[in-house]
Image (cartoon, rainbow, N blue to C red; front, side):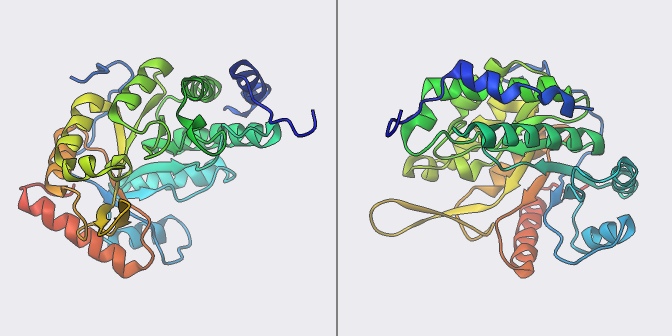
Length: 316
């Protein structure tokens, strides 16, 4: 009807998103089911983007080692031949580098049918890549149904559950996991909502990705982020497959203005963060993001390593 706002029902959403997608596939609140049995070297893992161009696996490894990284973003895209994917997996294993995550960053809740189907297919494609290369997880945001509070309704929560179940059921990963990044204004926007989501999804191929900065959406969490971090690890436990490393500061004045910043220039309690990461076995990799210049990444990495040294931990 002309001029009428179209509302996508949960049933219509699930049916239209999943249709035909099957052809794409080749101690906590949550217990231990689905966490996966993994054996790796002990020690912390740190990674970030590679700015220098590289040609092949040897140069990729050299660049990572030059930066002092023992974790990395996925170096190939989903259209690469399987031989190339396997070559990078083998090179990473030989160099003791963990491939932490394959990114998605799209909108599988888009109200537009065509865009939503395309987003869903890409989610499946990227999770399949993560499984092929042995990445810790495939990370995405939950998506958006539009502006405003609709993204935090019970109906939206149920849609997120259904789409993640569908992605995991299509791909059937055996080595990697589909995980949502925490967000300040969409699910999962709190530890409670993350626990609820994982319980509701109820799939072994689903896990957690932790970005504590994204959970700090008010002054109370900002000032008490040490306690929040401890609760994240206590309740999500072994489901945490990968973490982002950044920082946050609160600017003076009103209204409240919280801003991301380089690790070491904000108030995130990195002592607590690294202690909690180190408790998990294997420790989930920490991946630096959202900085602009290579120098900023070098300074951020140096700061994180200094905190690790302070608490008696080391990078594997």
